[in-house]
Image 1 (cartoon, rainbow, N blue to C red):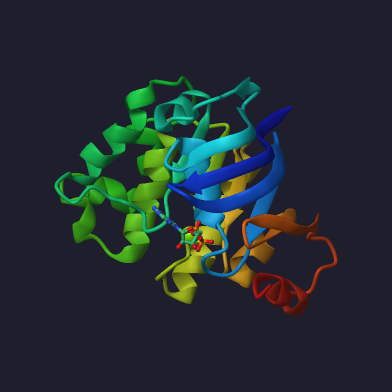
Image 2 (cartoon, rainbow, N blue to C red; image 1 turned 135 degrees about the vertical axis):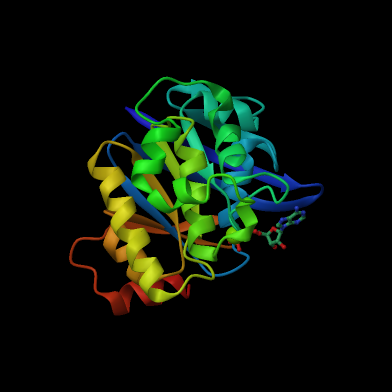
Length: 231
Ligand SMILES: Nc1ncnc2c1ncn2[C@@H]1O[C@H](COP(=O)(O)OP(=O)(O)O)[C@@H](O)[C@H]1O
Ligand SMILES: [Mg+2]
């Protein structure tokens, strides 16, 4: 069962052609990484699934449903939730209000305010403070919790380790493994080799808007993984 399937996708911002015949697939139960240096189109993969970049040709299937014109809410309703690059915590809203945004799609499942507070107890303590008043690591917890509120089958995280201290990244790795063990599939876009090594079972390498390599993580050393990120 495929949760995210892109087939020969070409995507644009205006006249800028960013993704070139890009195909990738994430099956239920998988933990997949997308690697690649800055500017190769990693975020554009996400943006195209959300309708923020233009899908000119190719197909996108979310949880078995084909979207000719993908839209943000379509993705969440289909069970694909995104933790965006830079977290995008709404600065005028409290922690609790930011969480409510994620629940707007009203999908059934184990996640609600109480269960995300159990996963990240600090969010309960800070529930009525502004989301952006917290540390970077706490804001990343909030961004993940907000995505979980949509009860996704697939969680896409776009460079979640960005700007976090190594010890906070390690905690993030533990959380993502726990979520995956409990049945949430993961698509992790990352440049942090250590986090990829902890979380992913398989990876794609993106270069200049195309997939140039894909393989299992098994047996892959940190050094060769690092070389892949530098492609
Ligand atoms: N909103 C946008 N409008 C036009 N070009 C963009 C936009 N966002 C990104 N790009 C360009 O698309 C390319 C891929 O960007 P992006 O997907 O953000 O890369 P990555 O996430 O791998 O760093 C880059 O050349 C970038 O300058
Ligand atoms: Mg990016």
